[in-house]
Length: 275
Image 1: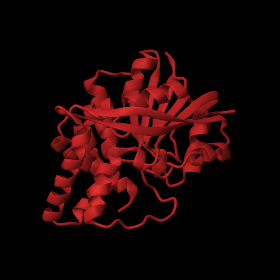
Image 2 (image 1 turned 120 degrees about the vertical axis):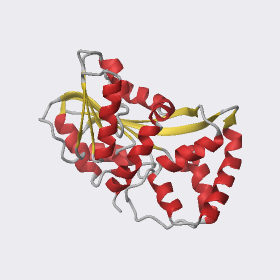
Image 3 (image 1 turned 180 degrees about the vertical axis):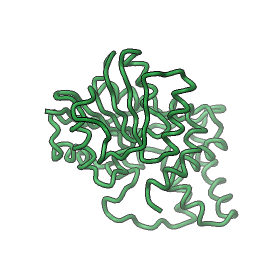
């Protein structure tokens, strides 16, 4: 099953948990807005928008005179984004099914382009970045958020560590689509430079991922959110899943505060400008 099919299957889960995910990743959204220098009245493209984030959050920054476009290869994600925009009464946000390497927009269409946790899944990241530069207006900026290594992100490794104890992982081919494809500092920065971006910059963002849910509910959220976790869990017995769930909930105790969980987190914010 390819990556797009996995995200299509994930769409109902991401829509169901949309408000919680929006809150968890709000610090990343703010960093993308800052590093792409989004301002009131801007036209902004969100690539790999999923069920509409960070696109919908960005509408609050650009205001009614700005406009937001979001694209994603998964039709289910786009349908969820359209429902969210309709529920919020937004008239200046549009969403459509498209891939990063074939953006359905004329050159020089946007004042900023962002992508949160999308570029690591592009079939060809350099082609995707070149397309994003094409639709960006001269001297305007793009910004990406990618995960730092898993050991710096217990949001991921608490689950993966427990799963690996019960089901040995299969090694991934080098540079294959994966959440940690650009976890090595400088790797995505080099892609931007090779694609023709100027003023390329990389910084580590440290923050807390916070969710107002119990460890038990967080197990459900993460096991539904993650395409890789869902795929691995689908191939094992209910007894193994129960054992993994028990281990994860036990490990989550150190990150639990009352009826909430809070994880230290690190992502890389990589940005650049069109010449």
